[in-house]
Image (cartoon, rainbow, N blue to C red; front, top):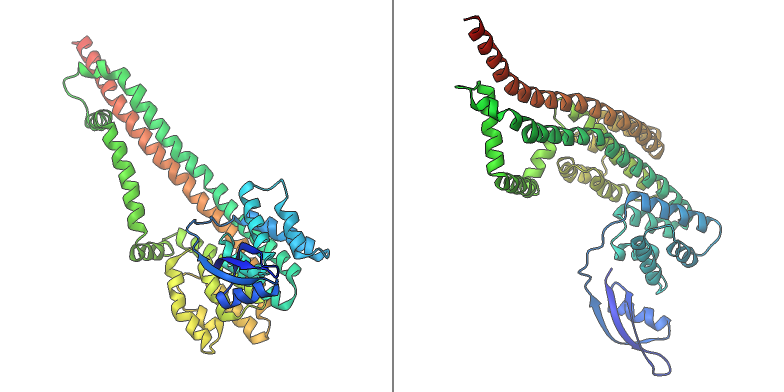
Length: 400
């Protein structure tokens, strides 16, 4: 909803300046008139500064506090004021909540204020919009707190599980740098006296010589390569192709399907249980998957549901979801308990996603250890082969 910067006059003829959100100038005029202010000029404010979305943990804490305060009978304005003045939260979060409070004091609904803020996810906005119509704001806030707590837990699980593989990658770089920068120079004088070095040693010295001489070019090439890969992957067709390849990988594809299905089912469950229309819930849930290939397939699935078809029939052909999702939805449709089945399958898939993440890490760790062993082993072979060759030459000359 647009935000207008206005100039108005009160009953005494005093000029008043301020800003207020409204669908159009006529609505702004009516809002000001309700405050006994009369609009003189209005100008739509274009917010060019991009606001970073709040993290799931921050949103969960916000919803939990809001739900607790509203459930205790505290008014919305006072509850937001108490949350914004909380010293335990970050200054950026305090600024977002303070701006939210300022907009609400102008007579704007909470869901519209969240939409104007840009710091809150689309799902949360629709949930609170439905809660405003149903009058169960406190219950919705508690439900949102639980939802984003689970999302934060899943994201934290992924980050913590990939920490050790990242550490192994770092150690590979450090070990190679020590071997090339410190160990190899110790043998240069010995190798220089040899007539011919073994092939692995020549390859290793060629690589180290190139890196040592053109190190600045190597660094620039790596940086340019990373930027080029990012630019290429940001192209829609390329990203679509990559996301399709992800779910068809030999081992990781099945595990990624479980994670994607868990994200979708949890979001859809929360939206549908809150009374959001199924078509709207699907449009929002598709954005939470994190895979453009699966997201694109909803262009065909959504019209099926909009035309009166069953959700299970629309979901079943989607390539990227586990079949358990469509089976569970079909049971819910047949028994008239779709909301219960969505909650049940969301909980089950989230449990399976934890196991899928653990299995992914279980495959990554030995693979990286093998890579490290191969690199270090090649370097050690390249160093030891000429040493053993020199020992053999010395031994042969002694017998002669």
